[in-house]
Amino acid sequence: VSAISFLTRKSADVSIARASAGTLVSRLSSLCKLSAEELDLLSNLTRSTRTHLARTEIWNTDEASRPRIMVSGWACRQRFLGDGRRQIINFILPGDAVGDWLQPDLHTDASTIALTEVITADAGALIAAAQGACGHEGLSRLLRLMASLETAFLHNHIVRLGRQTAYERMVHLMLEFHSRLHTPQMVATDKFAMPLTQETLADSLGLSMVHVNRTLMQMRRDGLVQIAFGIVKIIDMKLMRAVADWVPIKLDGKSAAAYR
Amino acid sequence: VSAISFLTRKSADVSIARASAGTLVSRLSSLCKLSAEELDLLSNLTRSTRTHLARTEIWNTDEASRPRIMVSGWACRQRFLGDGRRQIINFILPGDAVGDWLQPDLHTDASTIALTEVITADAGALIAAAQGACGHEGLSRLLRLMASLETAFLHNHIVRLGRQTAYERMVHLMLEFHSRLHTPQMVATDKFAMPLTQETLADSLGLSMVHVNRTLMQMRRDGLVQIAFGIVKIIDMKLMRAVADWVPIKLDGKSAAAYR
DNA sequence: CGCCGAATTGACACGGTTCAATTGAGGTGG
DNA sequence: CCACCTCAATTGAACCGTGTCAATTCGGCG
Image (cartoon, rainbow over all chains, first blue to last red; front, side):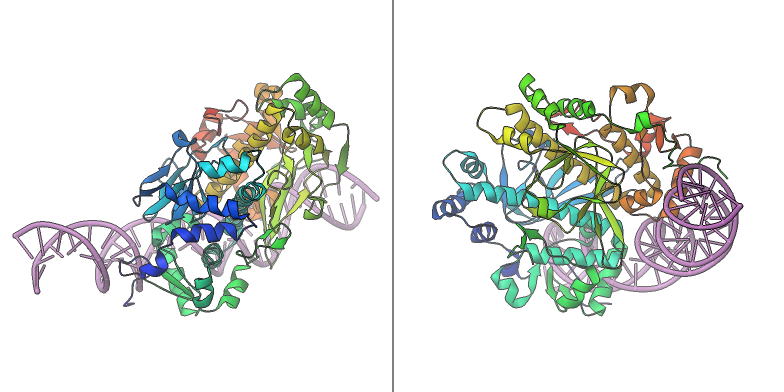
């Protein structure tokens, strides 16, 4: 009997768990070079934010005209089968687009919900600037990169679900989180917040909750990670990458700085 | 012992199996309304085609600058794990984009190979016209729809792999093929060509070849489909949709004509 | 006629699910 | 400040969907 429960506990280190508005700018600007004016526009996005409670829907097709971007928190897109089985299609982290506005004609039968308390910002100005004729080349490239990354994550997820064991899937998903949450602070400590329920992990990885628990226990016993209070600490990155067959995502031919 | 082998046989009904160049135009134009000039441009695409042998790579990142579009045949995007496990990420059918040019900054560690003999056409003119300032609004919308559909198929695949049983996955995938290959002829007969090996289906659905075989046998025994010589004939569409929890893909808020 | 890739089938093993019970942490009301 | 409630995590035991191994058959082709 472990004395520490694994994932979500209120006593979690909030300083690690909470992303600031500055995180949004630094994450997006790490994807491609932006002009000073463009950077300014990015940081102005956080002027009009909105807070969503956990477990609430943060986007639906009726709001397709209202593009938003994640500022902080965790969300996901999910679909239910008729008998109640749930599949999480992808996770939405700070800096990601909320909803389908990167591909505005898609209306998949899926809902987008907050997994934690979530802050989103209106991305209308971002889109307008990128599409405008006044030469915000960096921003339009940024949007393309965001869409490409989202697709790459879908590809990764398909390979995980199709051909990896429970153990490999779990390790691979954690490596993806690690790369997506990449910050200077995280590089130093190899810690990141993962405020997910084991049930949520199960519905993402196509496993049962019970087996997710057993898999996490085994990962800890094997010395890959420490997990407590919603914080993941990578212990043996090399082994994890070997176990999960990790391949860095490449953007533009070269490995993206933030996605090693 | 069945007297008829199930999938790929040379004696297959070639008239059903082979798509004509006209198919490309009719399929794409069914996605959204195009001007006469735009339709003309589409049919001119097939002037510069290229034939690829089965099992050969038909696109790679070195050719990112050469966008191509499927005219006939079947192809797929796939990834290998280090120990040889293969996962097929998506199938590429006539009318689909070959490679990543809809999202040009993505370089996933995947290869795109022909599953049958394949004919592709240069899509450079299509892109140029859609991006040009001379108002080919229909074409640029067409490209957006193509990208959205591709994403919707990825979402479907994730749900299949994550939360459906082998039987449900197989039925669901066949329904997707049915909808994607939708033609006037097919509506009448409910037949379509599926020139895939059971091993290919296995690597798509995350199953073993043996289990794919058993699943197909069961589907036939249950009276869902007839499968012979690479031709699938839908017997009980209603039951299939119920089994697979089929949800039509919607474009633009309303169910797309070709994707019911 | 004999070879080869694909399909088919049986027997058995195993990864992961299901069912059910227990523990732990945090929140709430008296 | 404690009894109680609830949700999440944890663990054991039995079960089963699917994988693995191996043998056989089928169809196409040289």
